[in-house]
Length: 248
Image 1 (cartoon, rainbow, N blue to C red):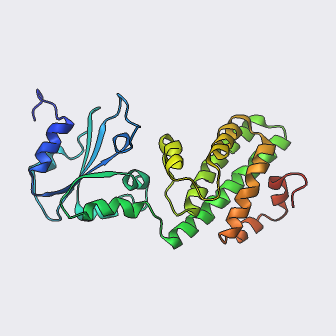
Image 2 (spheres, one colour):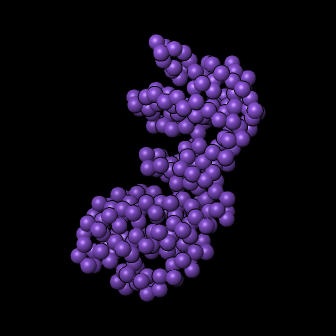
Image 3 (tube, helix red, strand yellow):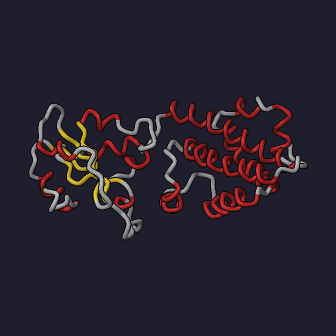
């Protein structure tokens, strides 16, 4: 490819298919999600090479245009990509085209889709504490006459809550763009997707304290059932402010 002939996705895929060093091409981003592609969607490709292999495709490492983004890395590096990290969800829902390891490359994204039990428990405890912290601040802000602060903290609490709920299900949280699609395909156990998303839409916009109280009740139940009661109990009497009037 020359400056007069810019690199495009289909042409690069043909090059990769004929290169014996390539063990797999991993497509992530909106083009890996059915129904999410738009006129603005580029092709995000991981080019996975056999360990120790040499290839002229190395010259495309870091290639980035509105049409095609490339990451060129070894199989060993790909095994560790996104574990942990921001790329985890993208790779968990990626598609492998092609796979020259008899399904071995394709199994690697699947590994990222399921958190280990100890990892999920640790992460859930941390996200629960972050959620409760922001919830408490939002309710306190509202009580003390700071509506903007109440809304900002409510927005933070929603972000942390999603991290918590997905960790409790041992899944990486999807990017916001894919949240509704993910929950339509794989709802969170014990949660009705419609009311949950409606609450997450309303609460950051309004700082609605009664809505925050109502949402906290099932969160507390789920967190205690998962063994995180100590995180909640550390808040002591402050839990009453989060639970709302009449709650125990």
